[in-house]
Length: 351
Image 1 (tube, rainbow, N blue to C red):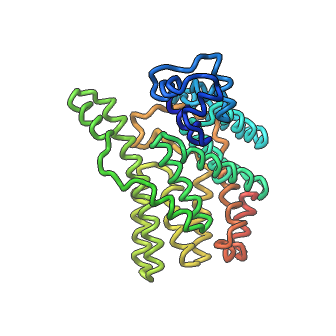
Image 2: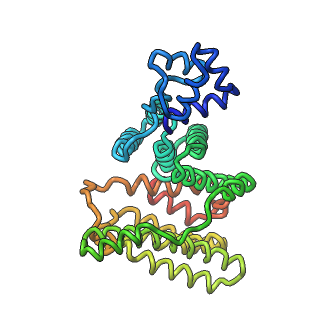
Image 3: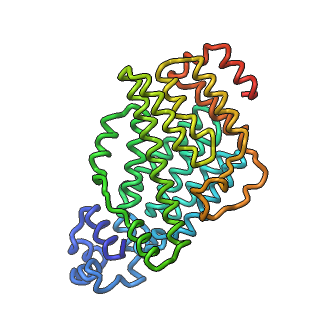
């Protein structure tokens, strides 16, 4: 947002006319008009008084705390991830709040920080219920702020993320209100144009990188759709179709060369059927798969993607713990928690 837009927006939010601002600052009304049209800018000596009048700070007018490069945002996200990996959640939250305070209207940073925190609580680590609630409240707050920013891309991404959180919490009216604000599905994809141009120019590596990224996104979407189709099939009492869809999902996910991803749809079907024995059998396969590193470089889908040596594999135990701990709190898994084979499986993995 340019300075002229910030001044106009803040003035209107305060309910002032241009004439009132001019009177209170001791300048002419045409001068304020020129500030808001972008013809001129306020003198630096006026900025502090203008900021106080409009309830903001000079840095907001100068846009020092708005735009960051993707590299800067990536560095900040990695900084938070590294702090979180050390298990110090208090320091992690403080670091997030520090960066957000420095760049309060950077939609991409708000969105990325919220998504990082969400991943920490849902995937990587286990915390007390009170701490999880604190983090979730911060996540929602960050998404809500990003959803009010002018950056349409990250505004929509934040609305999408918020809607999915509300659906999880069964707050369907809030979710529906956000869904209504999202754009309709667009079939146009600029990546395909870029791919076509690279192909014409015979920039094969550049084309392959984009093709792999696009295929990865499409496969992830197909995976989710197959999982949900399989669950709806169970609810329609079409159990054979449900298991056939789960098998299709497994075959689709074979391209990723990670057994865990191919098992989740089958687990969803067994859960929906409340088939405890089958659930435990599949869960054991999933836990076993988590003990092995994902050989990402073996997949043809990532042949042209940049690979980094992850070092010794240490995440298996933590991921297994997170998987089982998630089942200890949710009501849907109560029938599993009562089973002896399930308890023995937890003991096997020391969780």
